Length: 254
Image 1 (spheres, rainbow, N blue to C red):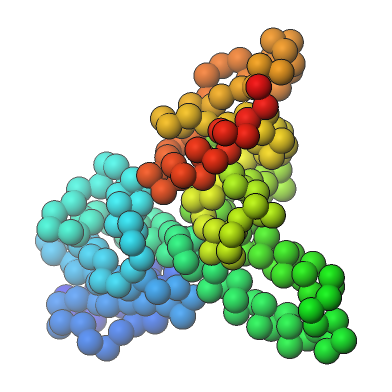
Image 2: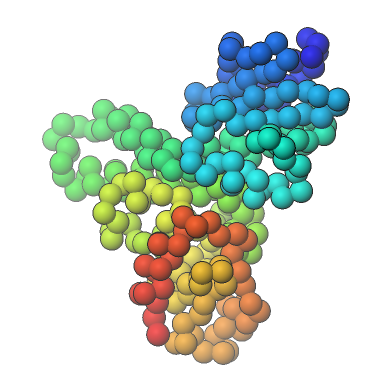
């Protein structure tokens, strides 16, 4: 690997969520990390192909990255792509997943809350004001995590217009036993506004395969207006979603 090739890899990392170059890499590799998440990657250039290996990350990270790039070749735990654009896409998605997967959203929330509490008057501590601040900061952290995990697009329709996307909880915020549950990226979905409203009221849910379920209280004509006639599915479904969806289905309006 020459100096230009190394510089191109480092720039790809810097532009796509891995702004820190680590100094402990072998001579033929570049290792990168970020101050914003815990993932670390190593990139090698072999015969005009980039080989990306995950060094330090979160549980399930490699599987989620592989789900995002089903056509990308893998060998010995490495993702193999050709061209700088493909490497950039791989790094960008890796960074987004690192920001989304448990328990990064919780860490983001805790850091934001430290700053918010520092700015809060002492008299407001332990009051309804603090509770509302915690809820606002937490919901924003959860939304950001879902946007990262779902690539900024609705988990069902693929619509990628942020203004109409909502962060939906399967197990409602008030029912969660801890902040870790509230901020778990698997406790819900990024949904377009009409689906979010229905999901929030338990008028729709999803089965174990990700197929959308519709409450029988919604009439055929209402289904037509709401575009619920055609079978709809989640774009993907992770095993970690299962317990939250089971909770949601039990409360579905019948």
